[in-house]
Amino acid sequence: MSRTALELLRLLAQDAPAERIDEQARVLAEADPQSGAVARELALRVRSGIDAHRRREAELSALVDIARDLASRPDPGGVLDAIVRRARSLLGTDVAYLTLADAEHGDTFMRATAGSVSARFQALRLPQGAGLGGLVAQTRRPYWTADYPGDDRYAHTTEIDAAVDEEGLVAICGTPLVVDGEFVGVLFAANRTRRPFTRGEVALLGSLSALAAVSLVQSRRAAETAQALAALSSAHAGIEQAAAAHDRFAGVVLSGGGVDDIAAALGEILGCWVAVLDVDDQRIASYGPAPDASPDHDPLATAEAVRRSAASGRLAEADGLSAAVVSAAGQRLGTLVLGGCPPLDSGQGRTVERAAMVTALVLLFRLRAAESDQRVRTDLLSDLLARPDGTVDTTLVERGRLLGLRLHTPHILAVCRGARLGMHLAAATAGDGRGLAGDHHGEVVAVVPGQDPSAVAAVLARRLGADDAKLTVGATGPVVPAAGLHDTHAEARRVTDALAAIGMRAGSARDLGFAGLVTSAPADVDRYLDRVLGAVAKYDDRRGSDLLGTLEAFFAVGSSPRRAAGLLHVHVNTVAQRLERVASLLGEDWQCPDRALEIQLALRLRKLRGS
Image (tube, rainbow, N blue to C red):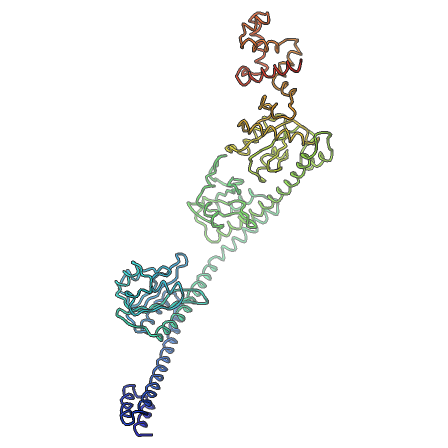
């Protein structure tokens, strides 16, 4: 081995700089060109490896120092500022900055900078996929460029390019902050002159990003934990108050109390007024000076707090009101509304939520009991409708008696077509609990105590939907339900068909007039004659008069009393007196066109029956 080669090895052992080693290698190459070139290449490679190893050691040492620094900062803001300062120093760039992910807006926003001078740049937001930073956020992979303004690999936007230009940035490198698959943000290092980032520099910035992401998440969690502990400490008294309130609510329920009692207990605890709305926003209970509600509108139903609570499913406050949804098993049963008190603290909020929970249990028990009762009533109604009209069934009478019904007394059967079905509907149609109502082949059938089918039909139509143009209620009766309702139900359906055909909302066969003869099967002429002329015919039978004959003569001569008197061979005053008696029996409107037509038709049918 030549003396020059030994000198080359000595320089490597002494950790001489690369320039000195290269100089000695050139001397060796001049003395022995072939072996000297190989020795020079090997020596420079060894020197480069030593430099890379030392640089890596320095970087790792710097990362350890950064980790200690970040770990000593409890607040997230201090961590972010430290991260960008260290990144700028470690990579020796003009600027370093960090953006955080905004899950709500789906983009990242500038959070911390070091070396930045542009206010516009410091307020920049980067949409997903836009610019270099937006691409890093979208793919969660590092990207870098030596000349961002002229690099067409990235989706340039006017807003981003203007901010970058105002800051004067040219070379940019960005790496993602990711922890356990959670994307946190992007860390950038940038120069105001052209600079090609090496893969080692990108890897170094990536290591710093990973360390920063962990530190940031840990500091966030530490801050959240401290905040939670403080909240728990301040809420201790509130929890005790809520627990005491819960015990009181439970006592109300165990003693057989209802929604009214829960509202009163809550109002006394919080010193406010309380109202309870059902699932249809109808007020079912209240305590204290709650706002008045009319039958058509309750101002609480449209309150902002009620709307927010229904949307979120939690306690909401707005415009001086607080509202909590009353729900059980995923089913909304109503809303608890209160006011007349200052804004609720956390403990009072828990008390309201406990009251809502207990109210939900009470309403749920009530609903289940009503559903069970309705099933029994529906089964009984189905048996009555399936039984042909005839002999009274004592078994049906006994089943009805257990439900508080008197099925051996006169009832009206009504078919309600187009009504909205449901438990509340059934309760509304069931004669205040003294009747039956249920769904039967897509129609609501109600059997209600009464004697007047027209009156019952009108009441049901009003209860079921005063403004529902699609609703039609046809009634018939009176009938004894225990004797079977099959034929009566068929007649009520025919009446409903006829009412719908002529555009009437509610009524009975009496209201249909001669149209009832067309729809009945077979036509019940006797009942029709009795309904139209029965009062006059009975008067004639009792008094021996001939008011029916006077009516026939009156209509036969064109409704002229004078000519009717000539046809009957009596004085005109006699005819006038008889017609006054007719008016007292049939009503003052008996000469109106529709009534007059009905009477004339009945007179013709009566004559045909007589012949």
